Image 1 (cartoon, rainbow, N blue to C red):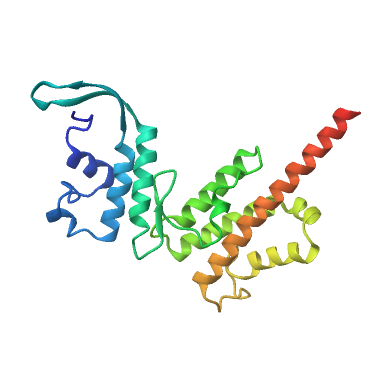
Image 2: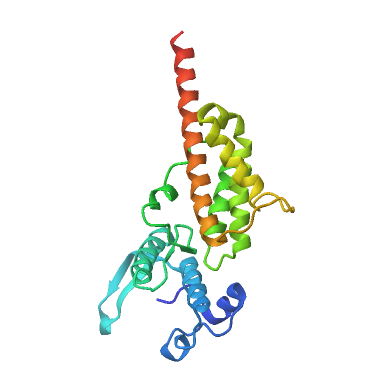
Length: 233
């Protein structure tokens, strides 16, 4: 059964701005760059669906005629299969739950990206998700990663009063010393920049992200305790 997209080549040209990704065949794919491949994977994620209901036609071996499809189930199956293939690739990438090719987390740090963000503040949620997505996005530059770390530092600044309560004084001081003196939030001659930027940004990104989760958990726990005490009075 034909899908809703009658001209995939034109649809890809319109959405991806490339005219050489279709049809998917050896003659086409052997010329793909890594960027082409990932662009096509991301495009297919937006159009895939799983057939869930239909009727089988036996005449002349016609087969199934599907009439009901689920994009959500299709994307789930698609991403699961794509990630199995990407696990064989010589670079650490995966397709995310939002359909983007992203860098896989450092080994042992995977759970932090699945952890529940314990806040009802939509501004924090939006900015943290933006920082994480930009940092992990395939092809992200050092400047984009630095911008992500800066955004996490800004969230910590917003939570600084809570950090003073829930963190050791020296730890709180060090977190902001890094943000303010190592070319993350400011650019002046006093900044320290003689370091391996890729390794440094990776390290501080995970430190800041974990600290934000810790603070939000502590804040949530304290708020719940206060609420329980008020109710019990």
